[in-house]
Structures are given as structure tokens and as C-alpha cells.
Length: 282
Image (cartoon, rainbow, N blue to C red; front, side):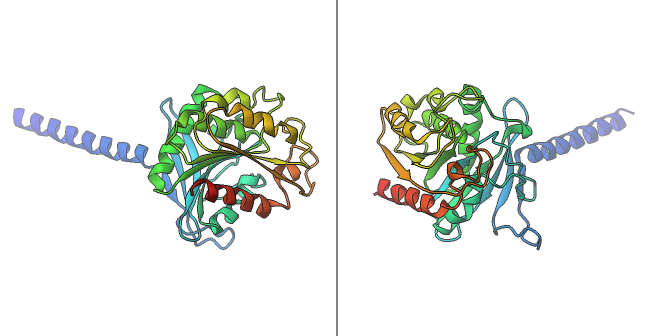
């Protein structure tokens, strides 16, 4: 009797341990390689969707797209608006109009991988990007980025996403990232009730680039504020890059398909940023 009981306890314990190991492996590994077999929506070879577990529960979804040539760096990209790209498990992006998505192939062609950061649980990030809680989420993203590549990390945000990028840089110290790039940044208080100035620019310690389109008519990201943003980054070298042009397709001046979103001048903007990045690293 006792021998049978001990045997049953042993087997039960063994199954529990095996189950716990499998569960732990599943929690740690939420990375989904992108299939390249689909004819409808071909994806770059080596791309992957990852759900990064967060301390409070839930996941942060990111999409990694590898460079098309010898790797020079990795762009960690924060979209504007609500931040909702709606990245699906197969790598499809439902909301693909944002500049960070439209320009991804341009970065890859120039030797830079792209890491697109989605919103949390399909919820709007408005009003959350400058918070300490979101800085912890960003830290998880940057840690994953460092595991993905040994090349320099560059953080780029556009419009509302610039608030997240500023938050990332203000918590990264001097060695966490190679540089900060802010494009058409929200610098005038609007509906989200936060701007780049709320993300502690005084704590940024890495080279920073402020890109401003003279033709941007978005009322919360007007180009004349570029100098004020630059001055708020007190303890790091800052450059202001001014561009012009763009096509107005969106009804909203703050829409993605407008001069605010660099619609029609994507290559000009990317080339200008890459030129600054290369000069910064010399």
C-alpha cells in the first residue's frame, strides 16, 4: 500500500514539474517568427512579432524587421496618435499609415533594423506616454532590443510618439541608447494633456535630433516650437533639422497622410536623419 502511494505521489510530482517547466517556457517565449509564405502579405525574412511580458501582467507587442543590408543600427519606433498600430501575430499591421510604418523599408534599405512598438492591449496611449509607469514598459522594450542586436540603438518618436521617445531617453542614461530622434513632436498642450516637456527632457544625456517640417500645420506640433524643444534638452548635444514639403491627404492637419506625417517626403526625411546619425557616430 505504502509503495503504491509513494509511487503515485512521485508520478504526480513529476507531472507537475514537467507542466510547470512547459508553462514557464511558454511565458518566457512569446515570440512568433513571421511566415514568408503568404502571397497576400509577404513579410521580410527574419522578421518576428514578440509579446513582451510585463511585471503587472499583460504583454507589450513589438514587431522586429531586420535590415536589408549590413546592419548599422536598430530604430526603436514609437508611433503617434493613440499609438495603436494593431500588429497581428503574423506581422500584418492594421493601422499602417503612420510615418514609422510607412518609412520602415527606407530604414531597412539603409542598414537599420526597425522595432515597431504597439499600444498596450489595444488601448489608447494618450496621456500615458510621459508617465513613470510607461517608462517601465519602455525599459522592457529596450531590453528586448538589446537582446535582438549588438548594433547601436536609436529611439525615434513621431508626433505623440515623441513623448514616449523622450521618456525613453530621459531614463536611459548616457549608455543605454545611441541617440534620440523627435519628429513633429507634440509640444503644445492638446487633447492628450501631455507634451514632450512632460517627459523630462532635462534628464536626456544622449545626442538628440529635433526634426521640424516648416509646412506642418498640426496645432499641437507647430514647427516654431523646435527650438524650445532643443533648449529643454540641457545636458546633451542637440541638432534641429528643418525640412519642407509634404502632401495633404488626411482631413486632419495632424493626420499621418499630411506634411505633419511627412507624406510624400519620407525619403528626404529619412536621409536627413541618417546623415545626422552617421555624423554623430564619427
